Amino acid sequence: MAFWRKKQAEFEEMDQIIREHPGIQPAELARRLGVSRSTVLRRLPSMEEAGYLYSEDDRGGLEPFKRRR
View 1 (spheres, rainbow, N blue to C red):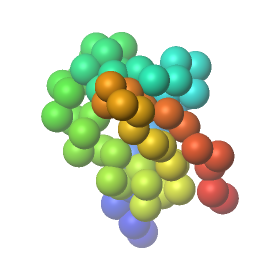
View 2 (view 1 turned 45 degrees about the vertical axis):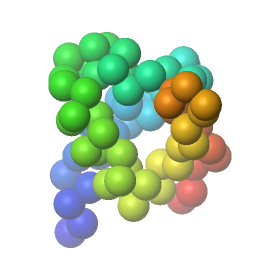
View 3 (view 1 turned 120 degrees about the vertical axis):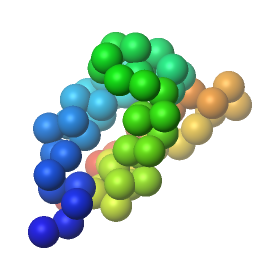
View 4 (view 1 turned 135 degrees about the vertical axis):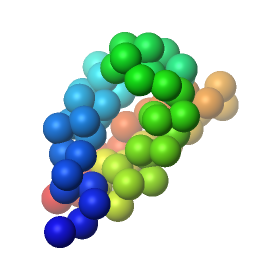
C-alpha cells in the first residue's frame, strides 16, 4: 500500500480547501487545517503522487488542476 493511501482523508480535506479557495497560501491552508506550514509543504509531493495536482501562482498560492483518477 502506498504511503499516501493512509493519508487519504487528510489529502481530501486539503484538496477541498484549495478548490474552495484558489490561490490560498500554504500558511493560510495550514491555519485552516490546524497543522504547521511545514506539514502542508511536506504533504504536497505525496498528494501529487496520489493524483492531486496543483500549480503555484506568482505569490506562492496554490491553484488546483483537474484531478487525475
